[in-house]
Image (cartoon, rainbow, N blue to C red; front, top):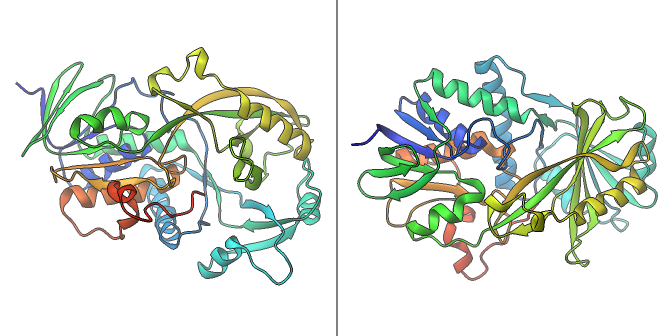
Length: 396
């Protein structure tokens, strides 16, 4: 006999699973949120205390989504009576364009009406102490961007889910999913039946979707989240978040990767500066094995800190692992199961899903309830990689 029957089960209590479960419960659905680890935990992609929230994105649909996400984060703050977002501005550091030419980001800011200001490297270094950027850089200050308190956001969603009558069961690893007119989920501690199922399993997506007949081109990366000690405490406390898109990709020198950073308010006196790139691992459960402890990205960051952030020590004070789940085009997969319409799933957030969590949760809720979806999901379909020209959206 089933331990619990519900309208919908959500598997995975990361930020998108929590958002989805909360929005279902708020609509009056009897909702069960399952999580394999004890909460809170640091095994997946949603832990930690800070994420960047920004408008700028090369794809107009993503700008529209994050614009709505900003509004939904504000609504969450009001409902939870908790401050989640701090506006800091964001420095987008790019190479200087040739005279009379605009780059991709110029068009984004102009076309999407995002409040911004242009700086050259000299002006940036004069405004913000502790940094050094010599040469031809074009810097765009996105004024409305800032920092999301990630851990607080998770707790807010979880508490509100419970307030609206939902249920959370943690420490329950999924062993089997049996699809049908109703979905049966077997875990290490029980059996649960629901009319529908939302899968938001993060790095464990392939393990849960493959038995359901979905083989997706997902790659899991271990990311080293690094915190660097201020030489003078408080130097970077009010620093903007930043993303430097001029850094060479360590795997392919002809491509660029991104170094990003956040102010020193997560840990006192420590600034978060990370590489948006890591080492691929075969199994998310093996994240901390010795052979998966590649520190090449930390070496790249140390050189970057020495060159551009003389106000920081060039050896990280704290290194915390995090997992990215990437698609080939670095765009998430959000879709219905092709055979079982009462199963929907979201995965492959590619290290950029947190800021979109309110909207992604809304979309998953609309899909599972058969409601009109507010966005064209063509670019997010799971089968796009099997189509000619599939996977063309930008990854930043």
